Length: 204
Ligand SMILES: [Zn+2]
Ligand SMILES: [Zn+2]
Image 1 (cartoon, protein in one colour):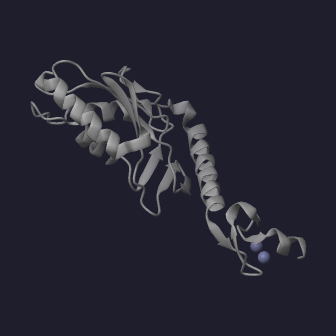
Image 2 (cartoon, protein in one colour):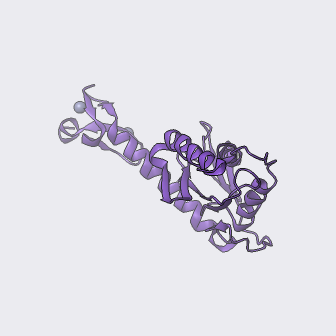
Image 3 (cartoon, protein in one colour):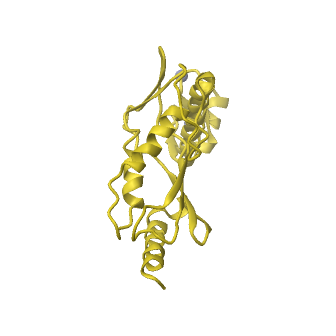
């Protein structure tokens, strides 16, 4: 094995153990990682005057393609795919990785992921104004300004689904009889968010 191949294999092993099910090998020198942002407790999404607070965002996908001169000479090539970044913002993110100070002979993917994660933390502001972009082929699935409204609603729905799924997996205390029951057996009143066990609600 050449020195480069060895370092590539080691990097893949390390990333696999960190990202586990979020890491997918596509072929010998290509893989994708689903990156989840660490959202603050009051994470906000905004489109003009519409604001919503969410806990869950879908993953961003980073695809890495190794070549023979990584890491001895050049960084690997990459593709970033994310539907809730505008095309413009996604291209900016690609440029951010381009501007990362690559050190010869040192692998860089973990640092790249940290850089990407810094993009979103406290808020995500969607933009429905046209912004000029260059059509960078590495920036995949960014939304165009006419889609901003749909993306905003999609993110709210996605968050509701995730919250619901989480609720169903946890044990909940019925607000009437105080029994502990799996969330999936609770009946939740959507208007106020209160929940009760089936027995209590049927006898209410
Ligand atoms: Zn009950
Ligand atoms: Zn209620």
